[in-house]
Image (tube, rainbow, N blue to C red):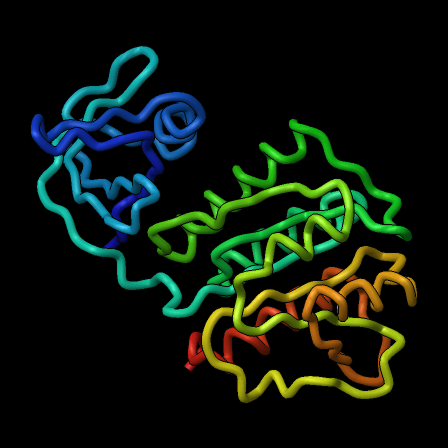
Length: 241
């Protein structure tokens, strides 16, 4: 039995029992997935709820669906994981966003730093949000992670001030200052770009309450480090058990 297709919508009008899919989601539904009238689908409004629905009408620029039920999604993480990742070259940032979403990360911050040679703009940021939505649908999450861009490392670090655990992955550390295997509660994770971090940036992270961590004796690619760190945190918090 196939799983009903999932689509993000701007809002669900429960009083009327109706919702509309438009924009890119509509184009994907109509031209790629070839959704037909009468099909069962799942609608997501970003609240954590999942709305079962039946496609009632397919118009030129939108799809109209009738809501048949509502339930709380059961695939969202119990603890808040926040990934801060240096902007990466090519499509590597998209890769990190996709995998972090699958691993249960709730928020992703992309930042520029001293040795960062990639750049971000509004189009790239929108692309990352689209990647997060697609990944959320694929892994049956009810929400896509919030994605934000920071022009400097300090702003990125300060955005995590309310997190219980603050972990800074640094390639030149000889030993970890925190045992990630025993953490509990919310966690903010920081991984650099391809160029890594400077000593000054590591000192800044300590000023902002972060603890340094090493990911072993081998130098990992930036995207590998991001996925590895998210995996370690997710496992410690019980998300992969």
